[in-house]
Image (cartoon, rainbow, N blue to C red; front, side, top):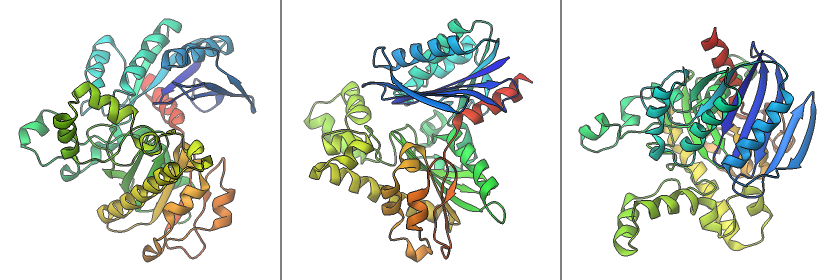
Length: 386
């Protein structure tokens, strides 16, 4: 029997097939460029192949392509399908079996994660049709952050709004769960106590982890806050939104379109939200977008170091964090006052597996660790199905 994992992001779809014990990965797939020209990378038996996806360039087309591949590749019974669900609110703090009642509750959270939640739930429906005998299981990106102290989760609004759910939730929790576990494995001398995890991709955030528990995150009520992202604005003065409503006549729908889809690196550069495109570009606007991204990353590292009251380790992950060596170097520069320094050769060579990229005399360990949300979901499925 097999376990299937579906992980729908804002611009990508990952899928994997595990053996029933969750230990062996039989197939891995990644569809990149959702919403544009999609490309599929498939890895089976250690062999990787890449091809274009001849389907509509949207999440529905990506999901259909993934399920077609899974139907061809899986020749035994699918026991369960695990889904990354971005928003679980305050109620869903552990993996759950997805019933219609649970799905209705999760759908009500869609306005808080409009780039993710609808696609996550559409994936559940599609998987239920494709594998009618399988148990559908949801794992939540917000769950890892429920250990936050109250001061990190509240806004300075009347308390009645906090009670109504207007609070900081934090995201990328499945990635941070994996990185915390993996950092324990690779660190010499035991678990680092004070850690900043940087999940940098089309969606980007950082998380302050103390003794293995999340105590702060750059993302808040929605997946808009904190760092600038591919198409999302990151931190913004709410007064700007009031100004745009009053002077530009923007309503909630127009603001949603602007903040989620037309801002971030895409908005700043006027070119693309893809970091690879910006690094290859010669335009001043592309360079300024990269400068702003680096500046905000450095600012958040400083802030989270204050939350942690020190820093023992910094971890880069995500599509950008794992592959953009030049950005890692730029983000780490200027932190000599923390005793942080990277080794240029180690940074350039880091690829594919966990690698320590800090200099030998650095008092802060700096790592590149590939994230693996699918493994976290598979482990949760095994435990829940047992």
